[in-house]
Amino acid sequence: MIAIDTDSGPKTVAELREVARATRMPLVVKGIMTPEQALKAGEAGAKGIVVSNHGGRRIDHTPGTAEVLPAIADKVKGKLVILADGCVHYGIDVFKYVAPGADAVLVAAIWGAAFGGGREHPLHAHDARRVGDCDGGDRCCNRAGHQSEEPQLTE
Image (cartoon, rainbow, N blue to C red; front, top):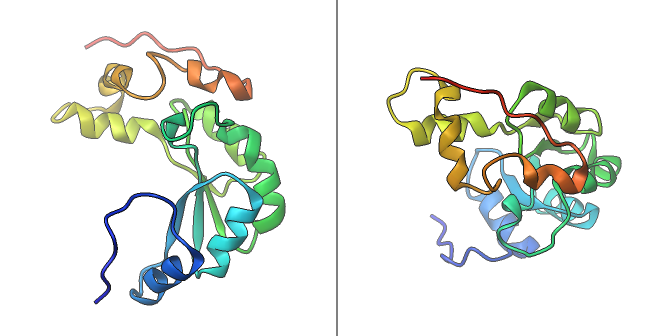
């Protein structure tokens, strides 16, 4: 059994390697924002990474995921599975991350479905993300220049 500190801050390569060795499940490291971090995650035994700035909550004025993704993909594409996270609300947003190198994309509608509880369709929970990271719309995506229009949803 492995004992992991409850500190949610950055982990060392040695700490991540310990986690990777303690399980048969593949380790995926979230919060990668530089090629160097991606290489270190691979060195630690990660099978995948999530390129994410955590919605910009952790570090003020951090670059957007789409800004850093191409450089990261140049270094680790084919070596690690690259997932991308950040303001993905519509199908077109997926292409904006896959084109520069993501293998797959984390979609916000899933979070919205969980937040929405018993609603029958994830898009009905779309209004729930207004309390989240995107300031009531996709304005958080402006830094990377890929703002999407919000559809009008009805109950």
